[in-house]
Image (cartoon, rainbow, N blue to C red; front, side):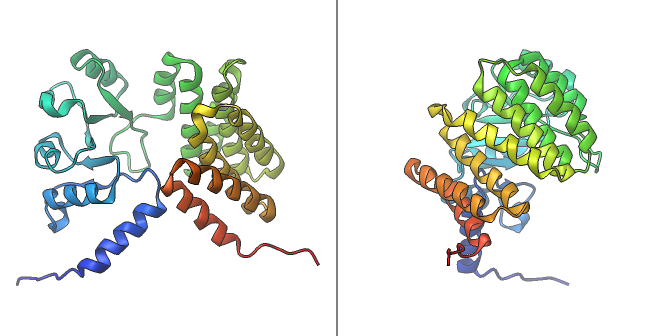
Length: 283
């Protein structure tokens, strides 16, 4: 028995546009037969969306998309020592997935300067590193990178309900953040904010967000990070009932991001503003 699927092209494209606009940093995935659309078509569509990165399932799929998408190409299958290096014409665009601590050294030895993401194990337990393993790799770098890794790890662990582990990471980030590095201190503060939000501690959560905003505000070269931090701060404010303060942070984020042409983040700020409803007017 055969099945014919007809796709409403206009609706499909409009949906893709709306999701991409509402999701800054989106990385589309095209693998296998492209869910029936083919890898080639989805690669071209990713370029049409204007995203920076396209993910594929395996290294073998790279040639089919590399000539149809000009941006970075992330491979979701974890790198292994037996994996041949990508074609030299493509290798500079490839972002590898590293799921075991030992493989990071192997990758960098085989391909010096290779770019990579470190994979955190999920409840599915397919592959990936524990939080402790990821933290150990970040600790080898030290400075802002160690604190930034703690921040993102803490947020991921809180979402998984592993607040105690997140708290340990946040505590260590605060301890190692160099006093002279405002960005590292802001990342540590955001890690603490994530833990406090997970615990429902409104005062500590909002205080740490405010601290991070103040620290990043003085760093002109990371203005995008300030916009992202204001949006995250506003979400926390809204969660704890501080709607007008949330609106103020979102409006500041929207205006500064618009001046930089960061349309995706502007859309995110606008979406959060719409969720707050109309402002309360004094009588």
